[in-house]
Length: 165
Image (tube, rainbow, N blue to C red; front, side, top):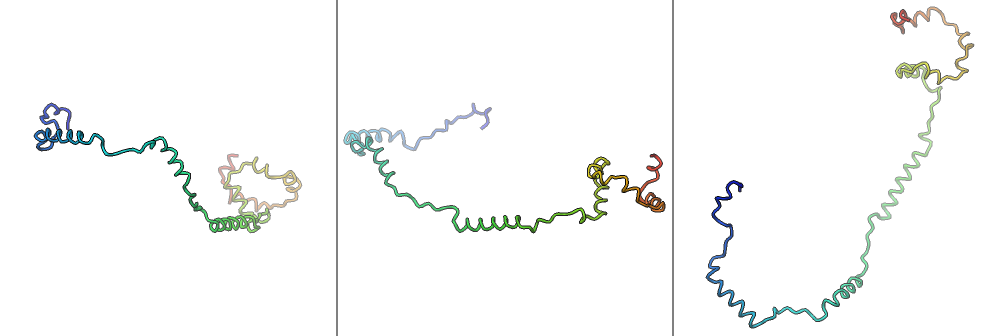
């Protein structure tokens, strides 16, 4: 119901059974007559019932037999899991995956592509080389023809970058 219409309610909402007030006096007198004839309700509690109640409950609880415990993991499943774990451990510890790469195995083109694509600077490249690799005598004996240098510059260098430097 809406709050603004509460003042218009004419009924209380409570109902009584039919002929309640006509039979009320007879019902009340019959209840009084029953209590006059038998003042007790008919239910009795044995003597010292509440004094010994706790002892009897504890005795019943302690007399119960232990229940059988059913394990969640059986030994059979445990052995299966241990076997799988051991086989995986052996697989990783065997020398199947113990393949180490050498510098000789790496293709020259792969190394060049790596250096070009990774944008390595001269300091990073110099840190990878030993002093023996940078020795001046290694470059003196190198005979490169002018034709090879020109072909390289035509294919790999842009003219604008050569002129700006």
